[in-house]
Image 1 (cartoon, rainbow, N blue to C red):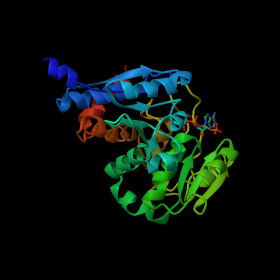
Image 2: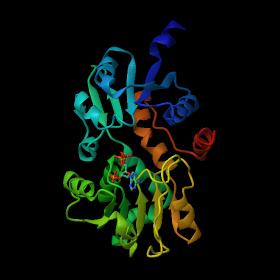
Image 3: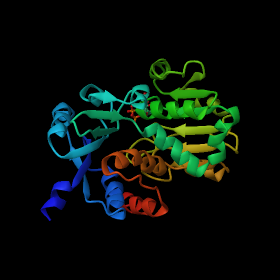
Length: 289
Ligand code: ATR
């Protein structure tokens, strides 16, 4: 009994606020499914307290944490090492506490994006959308992860559309490999970016519950292209509903969320978990509460 208690593996998610996070639901599902003696909790951490909270991780029994808004970039300065993805994306979403107490930061968002698309549109991922342009709406942290993933998939042209175009140009400068395959389109002309595109990805917060709607005229978008909204609340955004009605393949935001969680779970708890339809149902049930 005592031995079991000592061996209990702990992990969690730090954010501010954090109560909305779905990570505890999905990690708890996996812990139970794989019969692991562990726990995963939501840890509210104010940005001013992040450094201390991460320092304290070395002292206590946490195997690691996920980071969510607004900590992903700030945390870069508070870990001992970061992996190449975190460096390329410029943000951390997963921390492993090594046995020595060293904190290793990584970023699994690009991997989550790609693995989910491999599940749903494997042929398109395999051929990098056959050289057709990808349109990315947004230029924040999520857009950086998506662009890194698209570069690695082998997409030949990325059209970046953002309300603040300076931020889009900044992204192109910051993300290695972007400058020779990117164009910036103004927000007002976002529909012009869609002609000949093989993929449209919304990484903005528009369309999310409680935020403004995303207005975009899809007329120029080829019917055989894929439309992916990484917003998952609501799951069926207006963008996806409109795209589906006109015949485009659509990808919702839940799969990316589930897949990005896998490497953290694996490094903390020692089992590579699977993303199943049952997990989707469990998380969806929480979303619709
Ligand atoms: P994340 O890290 O999730 O990407 P973020 O860095 O806050 O979050 O980025 C949010 C994205 O949504 C940005 O691209 C933002 O555009 P700006 O860079 O111009 O701010 C976009 N966004 C948010 N509200 C918007 C709005 N009302 N109209 C257009 N774009 C909006």
